[in-house]
Length: 155
Image (cartoon, rainbow, N blue to C red; front, top):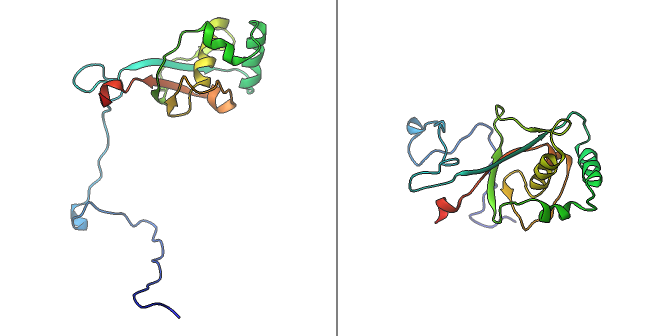
C-alpha cells in the first residue's frame, strides 16, 4: 500500500539544467577569464609561492626518484624534511601551466630533483600540506603544480 502524498521520484533527464530562479529566457553562460590566484596586491592576496614539477624520460617515476634518494644517502623520503626548506603552512594547488618548465630528472642537479620530489610528495592535486607524510606515487611525481598562499584571501 502506498501512503497518501507519496510520489515516485522523477527520472533523471539528461540535459536538464537548473536556472537562477528566473524563467528559462534569463539563463546565461559565463566564462571565467580571471582568477584571484596569483595576485599579490590589493585587498585580496593569493600570491604564487612555488612552482614545482619534474620532467621524466622514463615511465617509472617512483623507481627513478627512490634510486636518486638512495644514491644521495637517504634511507627514507621523510629525511628530506631536514635537508630542504619548505613552506610551513597549507597552500592551495592548481596545475602548472603548460608553458612553465619543469626540472629534468635526467639532466637536473640531484638536490634540485630531490627537492621537487619532496615537495610533490607533500601535495595532493589541490593542497600542499607540510604535516602530511611524504607520499610518492606515479600520479604525485608526475604532477606539475603552482602553490598559492590563501592567507590574504581569508584574513
